[in-house]
Image (cartoon, rainbow, N blue to C red):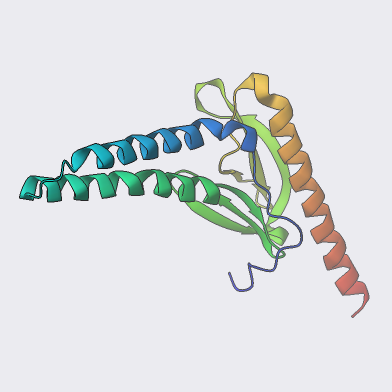
Length: 163
């Protein structure tokens, strides 16, 4: 994936409006761990205090890790293609391998944006799965990705013409 950092535009973050619960959870965990840290040290030092401080430190890392993971999720647009980052995996698909983007069903009655490959296989895109009542949001993501796909095809056609 050489040069994937050369973005053709802004990175596409999908559904930021639906990420607030995760961020709120991270803030609550952080605040609770911080409160435990303040209460844990009663002026005495013992092996139990050391264990408590270590556990609190780990508790403080959990919300930070959640926020870093949350920031990485989504569909990222690059000059060479898209990188779909889901909860468990990520996949890079080059623009020439993409025929179209479409909305399709997912488990439990949800919808998601799929990248349709040139061979007809479909790849669900990370962090685009939503309930049917959120279809407009899913359509906005699909439309934006279609626009980037069109730009990629225009660049490829222009490169052929200039050679």
